Length: 429
Ligand SMILES: *Cc1c(COP(=O)(O)O)cnc(C)c1O
Image 1 (cartoon, rainbow, N blue to C red):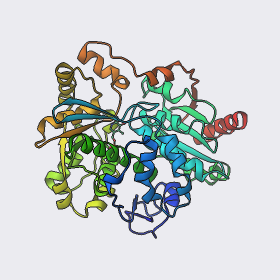
Image 2: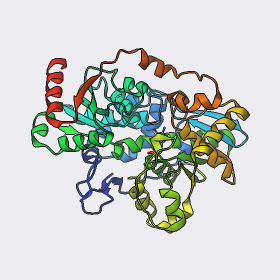
Image 3: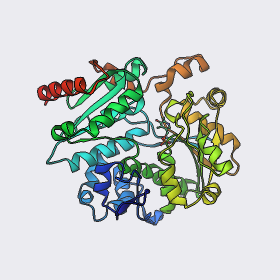
């Protein structure tokens, strides 16, 4: 299978090339040349999750040098389950947060880490990434113990929660976390500057692991495929899915799973108060803008990059409008959904998941599966005051908090960062 850029200015390329590049040279995002169609009824859901993932992803890896490693990559990435919880007649929650850093991003980051570790096998790679909180810990956890890849995480001093800072800086070994005296934008600027600096490239073979990498999207097809097959077998009905969305990677994977032929009835998008997508559906023009801060922080996106992939999948606005409903949810509605669901069902959910649960109250037809993207205990500062009770901390988070963390502070200056990296990696590895 070949991949091409949504920019349309680049030759088709292999999957390995698309993964190593991240972003295409014409500035576009990589998408598969076609979506392979699978006979879902012949997929085996009785074996391991990793084996199921191999069946779903094999067509995308066909003829690529990574295909021989696909089984190993899936075995290392799909180490934790996707759990389905029934809340009501016609309402299930698909829990995607049972991984090491308790958000669905663990699937994509672990899969990408496995791919890059394979591709780097003769020539050590260094992944450099800026984080405003959550992604940094998922990336650090995914690449820790991957022998062919070093990781440098930059996070802004004082702008992430103490718990998030701990989760980013508790790894050591091949993961160097730097607490930068600056903002998230400074961190991002420093990563970009290093990536385009020859002196860095000479000694580090730098790449980044941002969310637009195709290797973070492909594994997300798997949980839609898996749960829709299981749902059909159990209830003989096709479920619809409601996906809490920000940068639109997760919902793009959902549409690809549906296009592959998995039994998904329809797909709805829930966003927070960032209304760029609901405005697009109602008005027909896509107007990227600055994001507004909400309780569902990981979805605070005003210019979602994966809209390019959705446009490419659907060809035009009319078609997107026919295939996708969008629900924009305010902070007050998020809070109400958390409280109501706890009262009615005894189920506690995170603010991101709550946007989809609010949307569930608006959608017609049934049955529905709500994607639960993070464990609620990651957002105790939001949930605790609402429910007026302590919520149990996820065991994985507890494990992470037990590890010792060492914080290295640096100025927002590329030369200082370079010296710190040189010293660290010459001592540690
Ligand atoms: C990243 C994230 C989202 C948004 O996912 P996209 O793929 O960017 O749309 C939703 N919920 C949580 C918890 C996240 O971390």
